[in-house]
Image 1: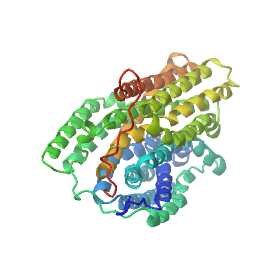
Image 2: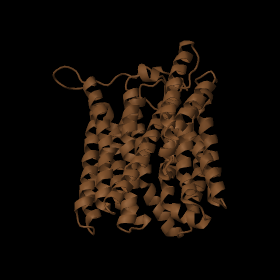
Image 3: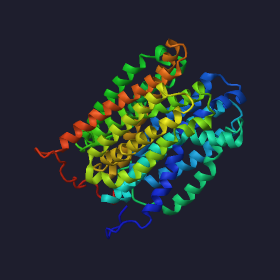
Image 4: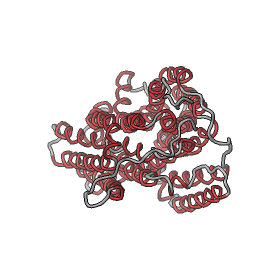
Length: 489
């Protein structure tokens, strides 16, 4: 936010850290729970299919909420939506930790996912609102680091909590959110800016219904994949695509009639870099999200590692990602899309080399030999996620920032759902075909994740070449942010 005299809000960096802490919690909860599923299943006497909903139900509710919550924040005020959703997330975390049975635990996780999906788009929208110019790039760099690192360190944090609290201490995975979230809420009350909403306070109920139904139809077979959901409800995929096509058509109709669409079609057709960045993110997260489950399966089932040791084995990637993301935010204005091209090449090389090492190296030293390759991959990932977020959202008008950020993260969640269903599925298929050759299974699965990243690299190269001019092959100076007027939203 900028004041009428055009001075930046003096609390903008402290406010950013409040939103990043909340965002880190919500994204960490996508992966942190996975390592505790066996102990949950034992203590609650639950079936494997029902306990899987503790993870997949959260991810599904998260994705369903993003765009609508972003639009609500644009229309009614991001501070208000952020604080209400954060309070709900804390309450639902406490309820999940105290759940006496699997049914109440799944209900609490679904509600927690709705709260998390309401928080996430406010984070990127508040960055649009609070920062300008080079500062915005640095802020998005920190936001990108939060997105990347939270996914990578989830297994480490979950394993550490279980190691400290014991096998039956899975409840502390949820309880730990309560004091952190309560502190973030108190600081948010004090530091987040009060700004008049940018919209007319109208929602698009038809658009909300169509988008929600379309995302549900596409994601539901994926979250049910472990129990054979794809084979049983495959018809939901084409049905979901038809519903999403109807959503796009409806939104265009609302925009033509000067209404307030849930997601303005101009974001894709008129906002430079948005469509490319959203597509790149979705493709990248197919590989990025899926490989962590594959690594966990490989190290725990193939090498017999504990959840904590399994998480620590991939820590070099998280360290590299955090380091590079913070630096990349400062370089994106100078290098533009070329930065993500280099980053994608590095992450593909790093993960590809890791797959080869785990396939061919002796079992004992394999994780140590793979550590430098994972570090390179992490450095590359840090140059993909945060710069892509910056380039995707920087030209979005501030009054649409919440919906735009929600749509971007929806694409990431959809890509992640595809990856977390497809890559572990391929891992198990390879095990069955090779009589439990874990080395070949991890190499083939991670290799397919790298192939998805190759598709993202193709998109990035095409976008970079489109930005470059003449025979010199150099990219033009950065675009001015003529659409990002402060004080809106």
